[in-house]
Length: 381
Image (cartoon, rainbow, N blue to C red; front, side, top):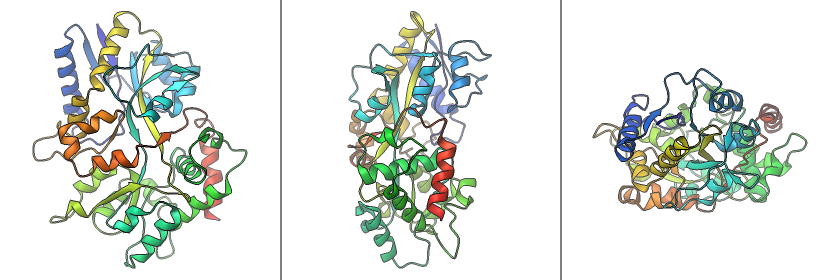
């Protein structure tokens, strides 16, 4: 039985080899456990956009030049993907795992479990200041940054993009109103004034010498630049997903102390109620019988604490160059593995996102560009 699976690509390439070492280890370990399955990760013919349900549906149905059986992608398009008829529900989750509730919620559509969660992610503030870390409202955050009185800009972050800016608005909406009923904020018919104001004030922290690189395209053209500038001490704080830590650690000047880095959930409104994205495994509607059995074995292997541990700790990279990826695992028991538990940042990530709720899993795809334009106009007036 051959099982073909494209895996979500937007994670740190710890070994710098386009994930070759990571994929090889996954295939080798899995096939050692299940010698009757030939696991093919990232088939060479794969060219689909992970955020475009139409070509994904064609491939999952086996109607295109590169058919596959399972795909790992973002649940933000789950509703649209289900509507294509290309995916079917999973019969069960791997029983051994202790799942973060947000990942399960994000993987359910109309009462059916269509995804097996793998990664979560949320917005974080990374700084070198304990007062910044303790800030739980946008007002407190801005006060803490201003109090530093340094010549460097307060904040560097990429706030643009048709997915990114609407997502930040939704985060500000949740921080302002609470994350319950967040789906109602996915609309272009009305925008919450308080959420827009929180996001506007947050964006002003990026201003320096009459310009705002967070909103003028500077950081959108080079999304790694905010993390690199923070690592090199050119800004006081940066905002992004927790895996930005991986890039920051790789770019710290010699002699820098990792213990100086402070990590906390990003408050973009007058509160802090994280909403979490989820990457899940989706099952092809044509994957039945032996294929479906192999798919269940695959997601069981991927959700094992031991598998999470070596991927999180970047053990696919060469010895001496194993900077943790600082991804957010979808299972809480992954944090209990020895190496993850002893890391200085993973326990903080777990605590900061423990009560996080699910990002909406449908509706944003077709309106995201209009939302981006509306929101950008509102916060730059």
